[in-house]
Length: 431
Image 1 (spheres, rainbow, N blue to C red):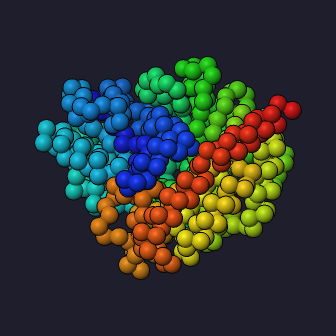
Image 2: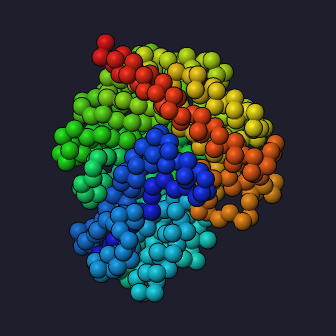
Image 3: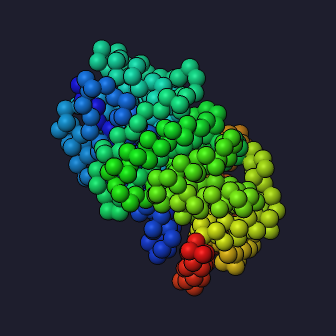
């Protein structure tokens, strides 16, 4: 028996002018290339727990113009697909093409977890929630040709039972990137977040298992660059210092995401730097709207920026994440956001549009209020395309204002300033 793993990942932009602008923005282009190089950790994990009676292969959807033919050449008994909202229509079309070839398909991921009934119209089966909880049952049912329409775990997967991902399956890339997960979910429930609660409550992987995964990566790459596939590293963990000490032993360099409050604890920041963390993405979000569910993550901007400075003083680049288009946003507030970002001390910046992903409180609210744009399908849910009616301006005004803010934030002069900041931050690391 053979299973082919096919992830539909990577950055996508639908709106023509934004796409053209993106090609001119170094920050966006570099991040797009980084995302496209990341392996689909969920599928590598399922591969790692696949019984020896099965063989398997891994096929990046972005690597081949003959994806269907390439997959069929492996003569799969099952094709396991994962997709994000922006790529799910591509994944659906792929499943339909395989159905013509009488090939069984199962699809999973955050989007289909939120929209399982929709997905059953395209794939033979839908895996809702944590894939590890259902994978062995799916394989057994495939062998018997008795796949169920939907697989739903009875409870959240216990990360203490996490299988070792088959990291070697991703092959060699240039540059080579690796992903490891230390936790799943987040203790906060930010209204816009498409990941924090869809797979269940916040859970933490035991440090000894993380150490084994780091060792497996180091056996394949002596000097790896790692991205932690966490929703909010360190948030809610009982002993963050134990985790950071273990990562530090591996002597790796890594990127992660956390909230700004780590910068209020200098001892924790120092441990983070010593562990090999080079960059941390911090959600500053909207400058004029406080989303529900953010909890203690909400605070005054001055306090947040003080924390940013503390983190960068330790030699860690802070990538400030901003959301444009929240309620109350106007052309003037977008311009003010651009000014704020340009004048800030942030080493890196991520600027996206508010996007109401299915399964989030934001999606439910905008759907209830009739503000979702009916003529824009899932392929528009890219983080860079408008898919809802703003409350204080028109769709066209938001699109134009977002482009204007992006050009300002990622202008040559702004990029040059952040380059100088990064050099200073890196010199702080060497002190």
